[in-house]
Structure formats: C-alpha cells, structure tokens
Image (tube, rainbow, N blue to C red; front, side):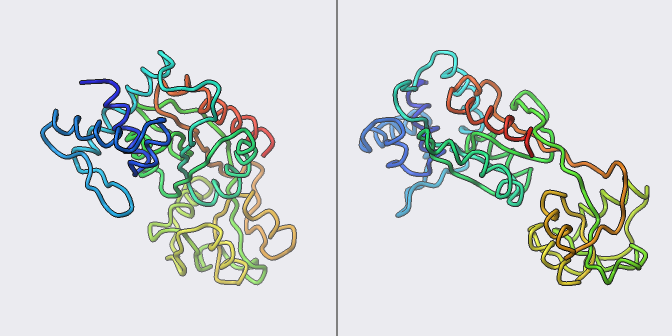
Length: 285
C-alpha cells in the first residue's frame, strides 16, 4: 500500500474534511479526492461517507486510522517526510477534561498561537480522549488515567489536591449527612475521597449531578451540598468565604494528570514544542 495514500487518508480522517486536509498537505482538493478514491479501490470498500459539511469515516475508515496512524506518525518522524521546516506548524489537536483544559492547559498553550500554531480542542472523558488519540483524532491527550500499552507515551503532568468543600451553613454537619453535588451518578470524586480518607463508601446519594466541576462549585456555593473539587478550581471561592473546607488534612488526596501522545510522535517538532510548553507551565501551577 502506498505510504502517501495512507498519509492523505490519515490527514482527511483527522481533519474531517477533504478541503482542510488538502490545505494541511499542500495539495489541491481534487488531488486529495483522487488519492482517497484510489485507496478505496485498493481496499474494495469506502473509507468515508461524503456530506455537506465534510466527511464521516466508515467503520473500516475508523479501524484503518486506529491501526495505521501511530505507525505512520512514527515513520514520518523518522524520515522527516511531510514537514515543511520553514512553514508554520500544523494544527495541534488536544483532548482532555473540560475544567482542567479550560483553566490550565489552554492558557498555557495560548502563547504558541504567536508562533503560528492553530489549536483545536476536544473536551470529554478519559476513555474517549485516549480512544481518539489512538485513532489519530488528537495529537495530545490530558487524562487522569495513565494509559497502558505500547500505543501511547505518557508523562506525569501535574498532581491536583482534592478538597471537600461546602457552603458555610453545612460546616457543623457530619459529612455523611450533607447532600452531595457530583459529576456522575456513580459519584467518582466523592467515592475516591471517601475511600482514601475514611476507608469506606459514602452513604449520601447525589443530590445534584452535573457533568462539569465548575457547575458543581457553583451549586456548592449556592448551598446545595458538599463537593469534592480540585484546589485550583475552588481556591478563590475558599479565599472569599463562598465555601469552606469541610475537612482539613496535612496531605489531601491527589489526582494525577498525565500528558499522553502516540508512541513515536514526539519526533515531530511542533508536537514536541507543545509537549515541552505544557510540562514547563505545570511547574508553576
């Protein structure tokens, strides 16, 4: 199979558009279309479904991207193919949790725009972020889960302190009697906190479930109940007295974030630059 056809296929898969992929590759759209059709003829099945707003990969297209993209990236990083050292960096596709990416990661990467970077962000759960990274949808993924296997290269990025907070009127109540504000019905933050601090399970159900820690903080401030939140997110509310720490521990529970890339891709200068930028910024968080 022609390596250039695979390179074009991966570019289209990541861009979701023949036009955007053509711009990235420095080719005309008809040339990109012809290469995709050639690859589809070789495989005997369609790789994309064409639509008014771009292309959507078929099941075969997703499977091929998942298998081929990491190896293709590694080959291109070794040979230097596909890079214009004098031109601007490629778009950088980042995935991670909405709160941490919004409050920490994007502000750290924003200065790279002056160097010609174009940042594209996907926000969601760890499992989906890592699946998208493996499939070549993303270049970098920030997760609270350390990925396993040879597909990824992961570096610890930052440890965030977890605090149990609530509005002041709840301060005198036993924590098991306070309603819980959480991001999921399974109470992942509260359950982890209870396990590490009390070596037991929480007994109160979720009074409010909202899939964003920033919204959970606002609910806690409003007096809805307690929430387990990262210190960086609730530090200002604590300083202003909008919430109080329900428990104080000399060593609060930690949640570690990992910065992951596909194995072999850090040979790409623009990706290595962003990776270094984040690791350096994290030392000041």
